[in-house]
Image (cartoon, rainbow, N blue to C red; front, side, top):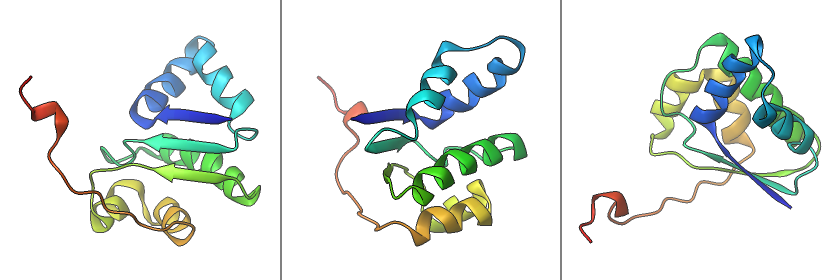
Length: 112
């Protein structure tokens, strides 16, 4: 089983969940530790707040500690990721990952 998490959407839902329980956040919490693999899509699109960073760290750290596989997608460089995510979260991700750089044109910019 796999779980695909768009990180910017996760951050919005986590904040919304404070005032009103979110089914999306319940789904993430119920499945993040049991999924065989989680894709963390668009990680590092903006600097994280302490609240966002702490929540993301807790999800990712729990998966790493459980020996679960993760895939992180980002358009940011390693240096940018370090600045955007903070050293603690960046270190946890990078030390437990193998970098695969993909090249090509952005399909969103291609005309149909």
